[in-house]
Length: 342
Image (spheres, rainbow, N blue to C red):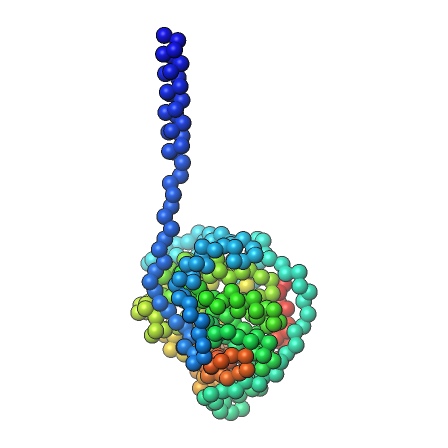
């Protein structure tokens, strides 16, 4: 009778242990990246790293140790109201609202040397009295298509700042971004990152993907959202103007909360005409205008950067490169950069 009771108790304990072991949380399967293919920059005639963009993005997402700081958790949205399939923030963030735990650089803030413009152009345009040559501070934007870059030579040619292609869509990472981000900083260039917006993915997942891959650094330039109609993309969708503005707002609000800086909007004439004329008046704009001054192509629009050429030639890069200028004097540039670092 006593032996039987002991056996019963032992058997009951085994059953309870098995139940406890099987009652934990279920494993969540990892999502499979989409098969989207996008290209926001025309292929260069120079050498291109042989890397698959989608594969590089998946690999980067799995290797969190690539950056020295921990990968940030995706930021939660403010309470939202639904309009169609896009969440719209009920409360717009304050410009330059700092994140809760900003990364502060220990590097002392000193004024950088301004290198004068020495670029050439494969397709030079006569801008007349409004030539970008009259602007004091020039820079470039690059992606994987520029291949290996000699950053010191590029800077000496007049690249005082650079915007680096970081991400597009919800799972594509430019395979040269991390190397370019590190090397541009080592060379002393002011640098920022841009995201090519993909109209077949939600704004929220695109913002999270950008945040996951672009470090939050005190001295970085504001993030950029690149919005345009791209005929080379696998996404043929052209949302209505209303939905375009809604998606952009969600993306930009999320980045502003995380990086503590209001994003810059990069766009081209046709997209601006269809969607952005008269909109986002309190946002800085980076305008593509390779045949005329921005005041003629985007009348009434204030702008921060002007992309005046897509056919630049320079030492340090094989093939062509985009050329840009800051809308202001050297003093205004230094003041603007200082305001980004505080």
